[in-house]
Image (tube, rainbow, N blue to C red):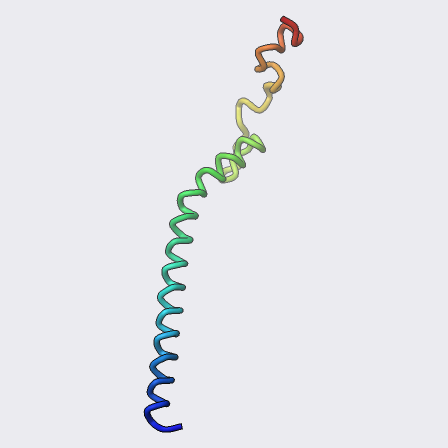
Length: 80
């Protein structure tokens, strides 16, 4: 392998490495932004499902009310 082939190979490897490094950094940045957008929604869903705040552990004041009592047909027994 002559010096010209070696320079082409080195240039190709350097270009591939720079592309990989740039793509990785961009992917990490996009992942962090996406997590920042979805985390509040995920925390809210967890709080509503469990009735407990996932951050501080406080209980919801509304977790003692049965779900059935909020249904419009609950009082009439489902009959109209």
